[in-house]
Length: 265
Image (cartoon, rainbow, N blue to C red; front, side):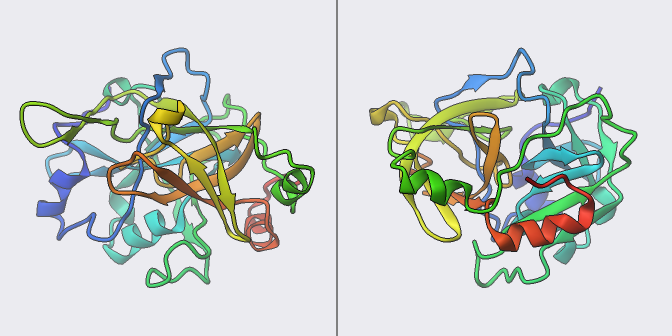
């Protein structure tokens, strides 16, 4: 059983020199706990604290045996802080009952610049492919997949699904609003907002019936049907407006991922 400890990575900040200083991680709001393990190929990046417990850091997805896809702003920060030896992953749906997997390496996109966030925001975590061998990897999109859908007006009414382990929506009443917590992997659906050459913006406004991401879900998947089309990059501070995601259907991403033996359409 995973010794998760009390509190999230904010607790690690004090002990490890402000570990979350510039990491706009995300989380699932107005969603559903994945108690049926529907999204078994979605996992969490964990950081081991000095006391041996683990803190949830970012989210990611298995895309090939031993290859865990996430956001570059997650891996680059861990590398900058020298935390590779204290970084692990898990695919367990409940972090309180999780088994952890050691990593082999963190590989951040070589062009990623933390001062120009949300460009080249893609990375992989490598681990022993014999571990989690029973989990089916997620399906990636071909280059131009979202552009093709937009040209046919196929994004306007599309429903996307975000998955992650992060914080829940804020609760209001009796003092300052606070974000909820859950050990469960969760998922929520969102509607299309807008798109640029690199980014996909999704509505997570609950007044429109949408949920989305929040702190802890960075690097996590955004699915359109069974296709993993983008990873969570950022969003608004209250986690109630827009989920901003880095597109995976670009030549830049495919060229980066091709070196890891990932089957690309």
